[in-house]
Amino acid sequence: KQEVTQIPAALSVPEGENLVLNCSFTDSAIYNLQWFRQDPGKGLTSLLLIQSSQREQTSGRLNASLDKSSGRSTLYIAASQPGDSATYLCAVPTGANNLFFGTGTRLTVIP
Amino acid sequence: KAGVTQTPRYLIKTRGQQVTLSCSPISGHRSVSWYQQTPGQGLQFLFEYFSETQRNKGNFPGRFSGRQFSNSRSEMNVSTLELGDSALYLCASSLQGTELNTEAFFGQGTRLTVV
Image (tube, chains in turn cyan, blue):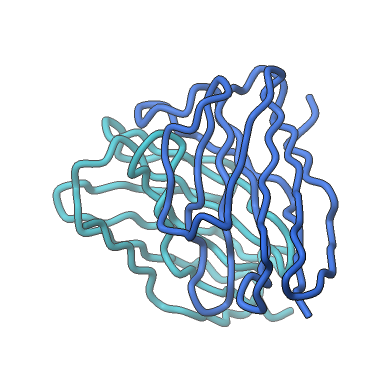
């Protein structure tokens, strides 16, 4: 049974700092992994989707990596800004349009 | 193009009532999934529809049901509401929804409060 863990649960950093969010999964037989951002009380915004054949995916200041063999993915945020404050979730598919989510990392970027 | 639209955004219902939530997927997307998000349980999969057929179902009681129309719009229904059904209900749309192509796009959610 798939388990997805995100550590740390919460993180506070000063503005401008680079940071890394971690996502671990137990079943490495995944086709892809998706990172989302969620603002309080709002829906999820898709940030990056990494296919299992890829090792990295980049979008602006965001870079996500995937290591299936070790069951890990990281989301790197460069030059953090207060607007990056949100909860970040990783998710892996366990069936057709059926995502299994981690518990998230709540990020606060302090001006 | 327009994103995933969920209506209504907020609902307050009384225990024992029933509720219907609506989701309009991104144009061209045929797969719609529903999730429940609570502080204690996080995001949990409810069910998924593709071409008007339910393909997957999560571990929720039969009070939770859904359907999909020919235009891919989907509704979910919760009958005999309980206090524990208070949650943010999220809908996700995907082009085909297969494991090989599961990039999912979410709506803003419907916040349901049961009193």
